[in-house]
Length: 76
Image (tube, rainbow, N blue to C red; front, side, top):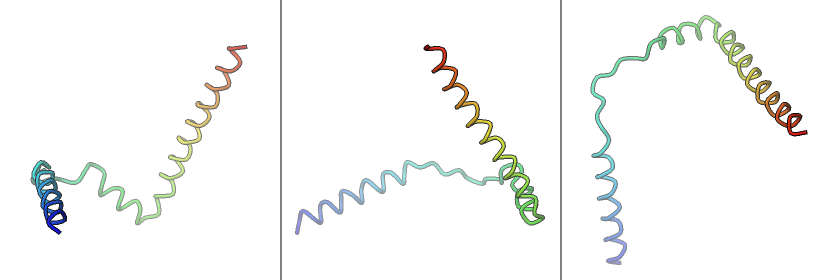
């Protein structure tokens, strides 16, 4: 049983050291646009933002596919 107690004490010491190493950010302010996101979500504009993200995702997939295709055809 002493091994369990010493192991628990060691884990507790490590956790206290870890928590002590985390800096306190102090008073923080909301990031820019946080209120706008909340308001637009309420007004139903979130779908337009999601649609924009889908277009960006599709463009990334297209660019990745095109680079793979070009790389394959250039090797011969």
